[in-house]
Image (spheres, one colour):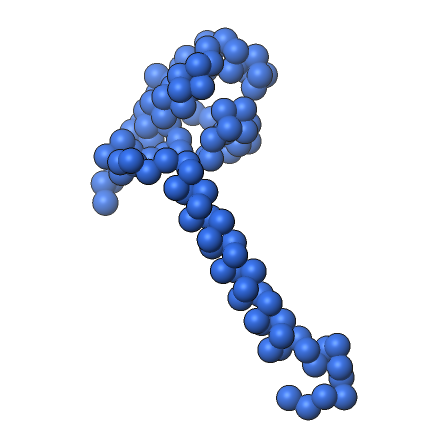
Length: 119
């Protein structure tokens, strides 16, 4: 695992922000207006000179229809993984979690519905 300094993370974030924005065919000015930020601030983020709050990360991700984690993945780690593959993984985890909750409820909470049952 590579060690990252703060400046490296800011550059990585900026590079990925620019890539995602460009893939959406969106200008810096349009993104800035939609995010209620200045064009200059978006430019400085993309060049790794400014950092953003978690609220701004969430806002940028929502506007760009991206997942926040996508801003932090180095190119060599990303490979050919795209959002669709990640979404399928999340969907599968969600189904598995739902089953786990149902099993837990069936096993441990049935006594709450029927206090006279032993178990």
